[in-house]
Image 1 (spheres, rainbow, N blue to C red):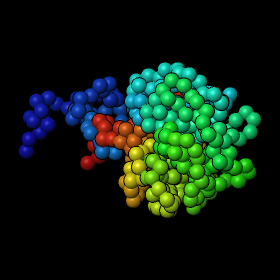
Image 2 (image 1 turned 90 degrees about the vertical axis):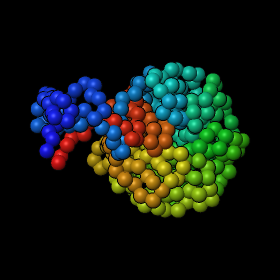
Image 3 (image 1 turned 180 degrees about the vertical axis):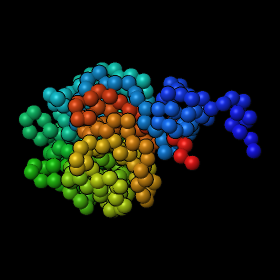
Image 4 (image 1 turned 90 degrees about the horizontal axis):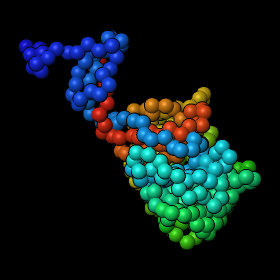
Length: 320
């Protein structure tokens, strides 16, 4: 029977920890944890550190992709700041016209975003703004002023659902055609501070207050309740292209903040690699295989950005 040295030509390296930059397929013995480790491709994916926002904030909006994202609004101070991400770093851009937090968002790149509703100072808003890559322009209002809703889509075709029309949690759904908002069929479960992903014809709504695991699927006409999240939570975020492929991450549970991450395949949620740092009230961009999470509360307000990739190279412990 061949041994490792005979096959590879070198013995297994003994390291007091993990090597700083291992190669794919590299094996070592971690003398601190008394375990063998390997650096390999993981289908469960992995979170890695991205570039920090210039302005730490929570309850902000976001949209786009992992390499072309936009961050806007948020708190403290009910901010109107806008930043653009190029896959490495964030750059300050022109501010929103109306400062707000806890609003709905949509967008497919850092040149295409929509912000609607939200908590203003003072009160609750129905204001909608569209981003063209340079400036924010106020466009037609939502039919119902609310905050804490979820959204998805682009600045020409968006969906807004759930939220708070004080003092009530609501099921309202509205669709944006690039000019006007139109009320369409409601969600089945009223809630706020949920996550949403997808498009105006293929969307997913999941989680929300009060610590719910409920998931609903939108087919362009109706919402249908489908299989629940594994971890019930609120103030979470998500990313995904449609109602058959989504990622849910972060949020608040009872008690505390979580970094739990789950992947949706159109039928079920599967637990995958958790975020490096649990957070809630963040913003998100990307897909279920290439996601971005930025800002939020850890519980301190943070500027940190994390990038999720699946599959991804990661260090794993050999257990057998």
